[in-house]
Every structure is written in C-alpha cells, then in structure tokens.
Amino acid sequence: MRFKKIFLLSILFLFQCNYVFAQENTDNKTDLRELFQNNKAVIYSINLRTFNANDKNGNGIIDFYEGETPGSFINAIDRLDELKQLGVNTIHLLPITPVGKIKALGTAGSLYALADFHSVNLQLVDVQSDLSPKEQAKKFVDECHKRGIKVIVDLPSCGAYDLYINSPDLFVLSEDGSPFIPADWMDVRLFKVSDKYQELINSDIFVLHKIFINYMLSIGVDGIRADVATLKPYIFWKELIKYARTKKEGLLFLAEASESWTKPASDRAYFTDYKKLLEAGFDGYYGDFFELKNWKSMEDLSDSVQNRQKILKKYSDKKSVIGSFETHDVVSPLLIGGEGFSKIIIWLNATLPLNPYYVDGFLQADDYMYEYSNKKANETYTDDEFYYVHQGQIDIFNFSRKPGTDSKILIDEHILAMNLRNNYLDVITKGKFIPLKSDNEKIFAYQRIYKDKSIVVIINRNLINSEDVNVKVRKISKKSKINFIKEIDDGKLVKSTYSAKMKPASIVIFTIN
Image (tube, rainbow, N blue to C red; front, side, top):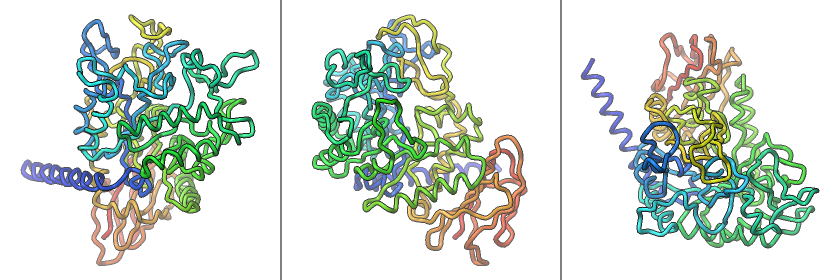
C-alpha cells in the first residue's frame, strides 16, 4: 500500500510539472485577449496590499510600529511560483492606483476610491528598494511574464473625495451641490462621463482614462478590468477601447457586468447593459455565475450556460466570460455552503465553457471573517478611525493579513481539477456543453464532448441531503475507455446509465475515450 501511494504521488507530481511546462510555453506565444476568447485564461485575483503581507503577531492587522510589512510589488514576486504551480496563467490585480484618504472607509482606504489616474499606489511600494514606484510595478509585471503569467489591472469606476476636492468639474452633483454618491458606495463619488443623452463624452474624463491606459501599458500590463463598466455609456467605452487597441491590439477588456444587472446603480448614474458593452468592444464580462447559491436545479445551470452561448455567438469577434462564482464582492463560499460548496465551484470552473476565476484566499480556505472588523483602530492612515471591512469578503480597506489558512484540501482539489482540464483542454475549450437527462432535478449533470473524447460531470447540488440519481450518459460504446477522476463508493455505470446515491455536495467526474 505504501509503495502504491508513493507511486501515485510521483505520477501526480510529474503530471503537475508537465502541466506547468506546457502552460508556460503556450502562454508566452499568445496574447491575453486570445487566451481569454478561447477560455484558456486561468485567472487569480489579488489585492497586492495583502497578497504577501507579513503579520508577525497574528492579529490580522499590519502593525507598522512592530516592524510588520504589507504586501508590495516587490514581495509579491515571491509568491508567483506558487501561483504558477496552481496552473494560474493570469493575475487580476485589484486597483493599484492611489486611494483616497478623505471620507474614507477603513484605515488604508478602499482600493476602489480612485485618487489619481497616472501613478501607482505608494502603499504598494517597497521603501527598501532602489527602484522608483513605477519601476517596481514594471518589475512585478516583468516577473509575471517570465513565468508565462499575464496581468490584468483594475480600472475603478468612481473617484475618491480627494479627487473631487482637486477637480470638482469631473463629478456629477446632487441637488444640494455636493458630489453625488452612487448607490451605497459612501467612499466614492460619481464621475460625469457624458451628457444626459449619452452622446457627448466629457473630454476631461476621457483624457484621464487615456492617461490611465497609457500608464498601464508602459508597465507592460495585458488587460484592463473595468469596475462597474455599466456606469459609463456605450460611446465612451467604444472610443476608449478603440484608442487602447491602437496602442496594443491584444489588450484584453473585461467588463464587470452581468445579466442580473438590469438598471442603474443610482438615479443619476448611466446604465449600459452587458450586450452593449460587448458591442462596444469588451472581450468578456462576468456572467451570472455568482447566482449559483440560488440555483436549485440543473435547469438553472443549463439555462445560464446555453443562453449565454447563444448570445456570445452573435458577435463577429469571440467573446467569453469568467467563472464569477466568487469574486471580491461576493461572500465566501465557505460561509454559504462550506467545503462541499467550494469544491463544487472548483469543478464548475474547471469544466464549464468559461475562464476559471479565483480570489486570493479561496483555495486556501479563507472565510474572510476578520476579528478586528469595525473595531477602533490603533493607528490609521485615513480619516476613518475604525477597521471597516465587509465581513466574509476579502479586506480591501485596511493594511491586513495575507489571505488564506494552512488547509490544503481545496488546493488539492483544484490541482486535480486543473490537471483534468489541461489533459482535456480541447474538450473544455472547443467541446459542446450537453445537459444530461437524469431523474433528479437537484443533480447537476452535463457532458463536454469534442470529437472522440468527453468529460462527464455529475454534482449533487443539495448541500444538506443525499440524493438518488440515474443519469443517461452519451457516446458510450463497448470500445469506450472509461476513467473515473472522482467517484463515490456505490456509483455504478451500466451501459450508458450512471446510478448512485450521492451524498450532499458530492461530485462524480469521469472521462470517455
């Protein structure tokens, strides 16, 4: 038994090494836009301020007076090989632009309270380095590229109060003449991007966005993620993307937008739906996968996937989505459905027609519950004297700990799923998505088929109770070779029917050749 275990671990190690090597060779020859359009981007979202933070005393907060250090462009490089081993080929950097300090949320300020379009956040700079802030940012991107990892940078949608003080003409005003607060985002103010008819672009705002594009291209980034892209009109995005593509044709544009978003965030805000954003030139958007917590049947899943595929095929250039099951704006899956729900997300990310997407800390089983939440701070770098956080979501407001725990359970599950994805990449990226017939609507059952290969996915969406199921599988013959990647004890595949009593959140994966 011991020999068998060592042998299997050796095979898994070699498999991983082959995966990473193959991924690196492919990614260095392909721009991010093409990778994304073909569902080959494996995206890992990070907050650089916490990514490799050093919280020595374990209280969750970076205490500068005790010699603790936050994450930075330079110390983030130390974790890039770790991401590469996880099969990550794209990093989504949450905003690296300077943040507001007035009327702020949290002791460091929200990453999305944009204070400047043409520099980097000095909070992310290593003061011990001889390199300038811009050089440090470029070094981080260069080190990513050396490992075959692309970089997407976040473009915040609204401005900080600090920016309003310096440039009030850039902002929409309320009836009382104060800068307008969009929705409940109390730390930002709404930009005046266009006239009320959404036809004339505010040239001052447009120029600042061009400056942002130029700056980010100068440090070598591969893509732009537009925060709440719906807040800006079609013509604004069309012209900005057109401009950016004259600078770098393969630059990816990802819109934070969803089928679920159907109206403006506020009464004075613009609203451009995801279809118009795609028409304006965006390569992809978020989809509605964060609704997974509300999906109860296979019909919910299949409708989401199939309807989206029909829509995306209407555009002349390829479009795609990310696996937005969990983002920095979504409560940790561990709090919603525990470890089982998190594993379901991993396998959906790996096998559906999309670009897998993870937030730093998810694979390391972080529930993002911070003990210091809303307590009075020992020290602050804004006008907020409290540790403001969104409990259950990664902290974007304070100098806080590195996300994650010592648990390896989800990492191991992810590695297994990514190895399958890599071995059957043609099936994942080119294969048909086919819902399978079953006698239990609570079971997610689908098959990905391409030529003579296919992957079968069967998931018990019920997180509380076991479910009996019989699933009819397609394209099985007497000569078919069946390989179970994940199976359960009493599951049986007889001819073309898989039958089992599936425990809560249990998953069955097998391939057919």
